[in-house]
Length: 457
Image 1 (tube, one colour):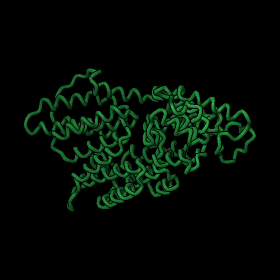
Image 2: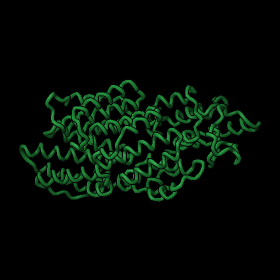
Image 3: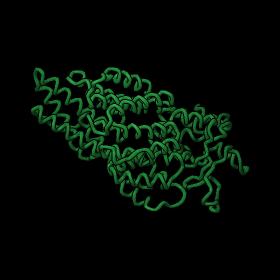
Image 4: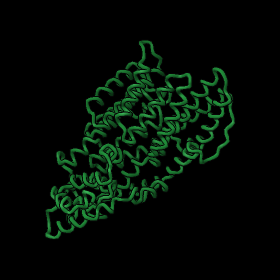
């Protein structure tokens, strides 16, 4: 019998944190995986589950209920509503929403009702996907983007590839990289299948020194595919594409492309819960290309981007000390580079390091620090639309986690202007939008924004 369906265990599940822990362990979801879904660090979730940090924010509770399929009543929030269970309509609109620390507080039938809900909870959480998640993917079009690339990765989509002269293939790969950095994800997805097969055909036809150059271009193409799949949260295929990039880069002739491809594998590993492996890989990749005193700008940019990825991975694993040290090292490299530019499609520079500091603080649960870092950023200095969109989405996530819906929406609207595709296709944006739609009060412009990005509340 599952622990959560056992009547004795159920009767003891009195606090929201305990309910979340039982729901998570019943579904065999790790703290790291749940944190990746919700935008919180594993250490923050652990503190919430153990009662070391109060779990009272309705936005956080609804997010956890949605991700774990928990009946809202079990967390003391109203089912289908916006406030607390039993709060009524006369509650002060300006009062911060709180939930009861003890689920048994209230009327005499409350404990009986909650035990009934707990007893039936295991059946409610047995489904592999939450209601509405597939519908969100379909309405936003992100599933279409992923399938375009998946078909080539897995051989289910036949696309004829003809070899090209290396300069022509190199120009096509550079153009695809610009599509990604310009947040032109639909155009990139449309062109990637034929670009992958063309690059593979060119590699097969190449001989001598040209063969290694063709392998390098194929690796860059697979890395772009992995980046796009990460954007739409298609993590399994993203890992496949990243691994193929590494295999091609190892046969290629450019150590910086190999390092960048290993960074792609690390990102995919982190997102699938294998953070230790991700951290080991990205640190090893960075050590392999540690720059000398007279390193080129491209070398510094790739090395610095690896340090940023390592810092973010440490933060996602709840390792605050390592994250601080690594992002500090990245800042030193950015200081050596001295410019914000898009060398090797990294967008690395002092401003992008500050953007990573926003994301790192948010993942660690330090919303106030995230916003403090955000205030030091001049988005116009970021060299690509993708980075500017990422910055504003990270700001929105910090405000959302902090329980400031108006500012969250404001950041999302700016992100939409900076990089429309970043808000249309990214699942974290959709989850925030759904939470805002279900939240208390009406935010001007929210429903129109939701309609533009394909989200129905």
